[in-house]
Image (tube, rainbow, N blue to C red; front, side, top):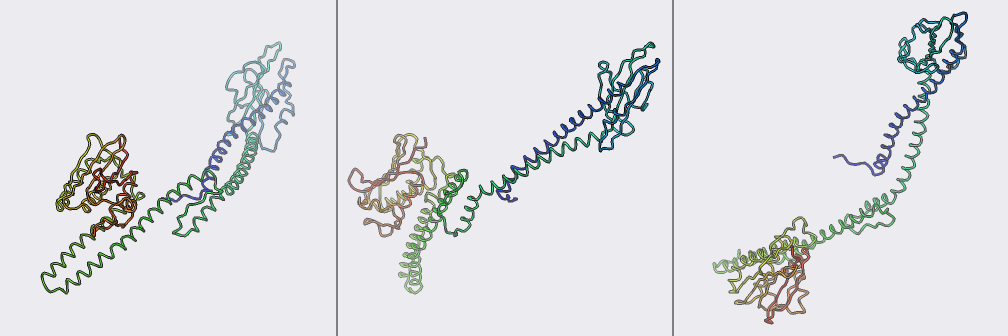
Length: 462
């Protein structure tokens, strides 16, 4: 792909190219106008010459006499090497004086003493003519006399070229001056943009602070604002990736060290019973590590700036919650927990990312199962309230003290009622998913007075 040139050159091209096209068009029109002007001027000279000859045509002793005055041909004297032709002929076509083979007028005369102008080739030249008929009255009744005067086109062409060149020279000078003024104006007008370019070029790779639009033209400010918005999103994305790396390196160090230690003990253990116990510990630690890695990945994916808006679709939250609850029934049975689901009639559709909404349901229900005692009760509900869709997860476990309900959304925070095997990421993941879906999450105590109720409120899709 060809890279575009500088903005200054592009602006000058956009301005000057139309001007050059207009100059070329105007040159064509000016040439036609100059030619018409030259023709009109020299046609008047031809007419004056014809009338001068006509005034010297008369009848003497019943014979037509012509005395061609020198002034009739002197009118055409110029620096050009044009040639003059003339002819005086009778009505019968007999040449009285002049060039006998001059071409006659191609059309008739409107009236006596009214000249006609025409152009015709003569001896390989294009010659411009003026002709008129002068009536003669004598005893013999001779008809009108035809008078023709012609000239070659050298003088006309020279005059038209002079007019054209003068016009084009003035307009070309105006365009040059205009281009210079535009160039100077653009250079001065683009100085803030050039300073902005230099300032951005001098920035460090890690400098993502907003770009100042002070002193920049109002037409450029929307571009700077868009760049700042993009930079802000990029900064959040980089910060999220950095948090993920920090969290992963911090949280994975302990289970991986434990796995290494357990493996070393297993290699030194000689009894089958001891090896089996160590393998069980390794299996449990591996499962916890896998769950931690999955939660870290879910946390990185759930950050609001990391969710593409194009991936948002209409999701039936009731059907999604029902499927998620069904998936976790085996986990609830291991603790003999009564896991139930209840959904209201009607549409419970929301706009969201299906995978993230599934992750939200999994984390809420899995947390409830983990913290609810054996033989407890958990209910997942989805209801429609006006233009809202509410997802509710109730359990009768130990709950969360009111003073800790804000902190449990922090990463890796484990409250006083947390289990020994929790990572402290479940509710943090839920909070980020809610933020990316513009949803609200609340923690409350069920009406029975024990346990925890989690309510997530979404904007309904319809």
